[in-house]
Image (cartoon, rainbow, N blue to C red):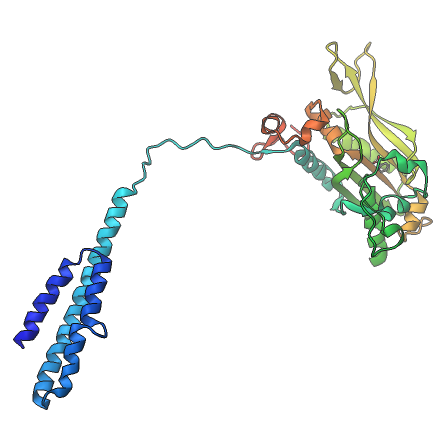
Length: 370
Ligand code: PHE
C-alpha cells in the first residue's frame, strides 16, 4: 500500500513537471499506456491471493482514476496557458485607422441599359435575350437579307470557322452584327407555342469589323419589338418619341423620322433628334431657340416589320403586323453623358470609370436621369 502512495507522489510530481502538452502526453503513456507503470502493476494482480488482490486491486483503481484526473487538470491548465500566450502576442491594435476603401462604379453601359429597361418596362415591354454567336439564318436570311445582297456587306461581319457537323445556313456561324437576330428567335419561339402579342426589348453585345472614334469592333445595341393585330406606324412614332424624350429628360426634344432602308422593315425610317451647336463647338440637345439653326443627328433605325420576316418566323403577316427599332447603346450614352470617344468605354481604365461611372448607391433616378 505504501508503494502505491509513493508511486502516487512520484507520478503527481512528474505530471506537474510537464510544461507542455507533448511532455504531458509522454507521462500519460508511461503511466497509463499499454506498457505503463500502473498497467504493469495491474498485471501483477493475477499472481496474488484473493484477499490481497481485492485490496490492491481497489487501491490501484483509485490511483488510476486519481492520476487520470490529475493529467486532465494539468492538460487544461497547459491549454489555457498556451491560449494566454497567444492572446498576449496576437493583440490587435484597434486604434489604427482603416485603409481607405476603394469604391467601385457602375459602367455607363450598365447604367444606360438599366434606364432603358425602366422606361420600356413602364410601357409594358419585357426583356428578351439571344446568343452572341449566331448563324446566318438568324442574323441575315430570316431578316430578309437575300443571299449575296449588298446589305450583308453593310455590316462587316466576323465569320467563325465552318461547323462540319451542321449543314446549310445554320452551319455558317458568325458574331451577330445586330440585335435584330433576337427578334427572329423571339418571334419563332412565340409562333411555336402560341401567338402574338409580342412586346419585348433586348440588349446585348454586337460585333462589326470597324474601329475609329465612333466605332469599336464590339459594341452594344438595344432592339425593341412590338407585334400585334393592329399595330401601325403611329404606334412606332409614339413609342419612340416617348422613349427618347424620357431617356434624355427633355419633354420638347425634337424627333424626326426620315425614310430609310433596312431589309427587315417596310417602310423603314431613321430617327433623328434635334440639337443646337454652341459657340464653343459643343452641342446641346433640344429645340433651337429663335434665330439659331436646328441641327439633327441620327440615333436610331426603325420600321414596320417586313411581311417576309414575319413569315420566316411562322407568323401570318395577313393577321399580324408590328414595329421594330434598334440603336447603339454607347452612342446614346455618349450623347446623354457627354462622353467624347467611344473607344474609351472598353479601355478598362478605372480613372475613366471613376469619372463617367455611377455610384451604385446614389445613382440618378433610372428613368429620368435626374
Ligand atoms: N438592326 C439595325 C441596325 O443594326 C437597326 C434596326 C433595328 C433598324 C430594327 C430597323 C429596325 O442598324
